[in-house]
Image (cartoon, rainbow, N blue to C red; front, side):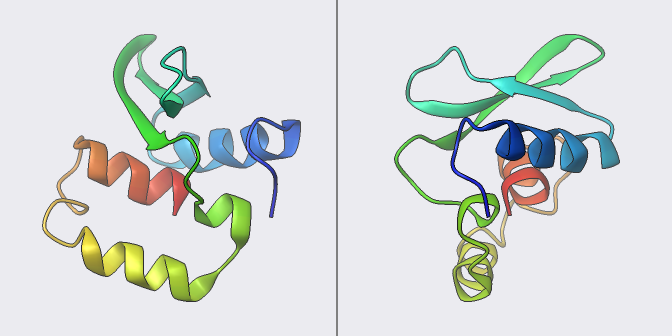
Length: 89
């Protein structure tokens, strides 16, 4: 569990992104948490600032609810839902 914006949070997000072939940085969009990059090209902004995610809370029940809510698109590679699912949850 790590507070958003800390080195620990960024390290965890980068590790999870790397597993699926992406990189992340803190988003320049003040409403989003992370900008996601593939081959140095920005492909998405994910995570609403002010909302919790699994990296922050470690809450397995919240993770289960998130995955259920986003079931329709979270398994389609390259979608924002897929990226958020794999990186934040």
